[in-house]
Image 1: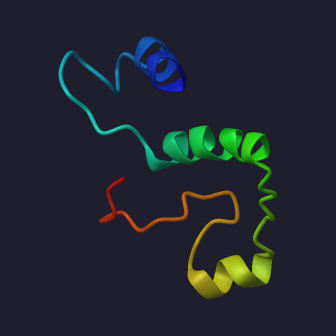
Image 2 (image 1 turned 90 degrees about the vertical axis):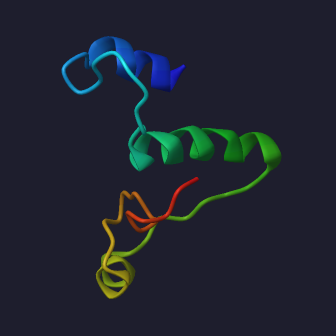
Length: 67
């Protein structure tokens, strides 16, 4: 549903065709399922995020990684 909302509300970024959706959106969907399966996800500290070269909010996979 989040992908459908993104495609509907951001027509400029997604003209008619096949598109890769942002990793941030995919990670948001995945994280919304964690509580249902009993998983608690902790947030990266600023020090951890800096060390890994990531934003503390994600996305957490490198650009070349595909789901």
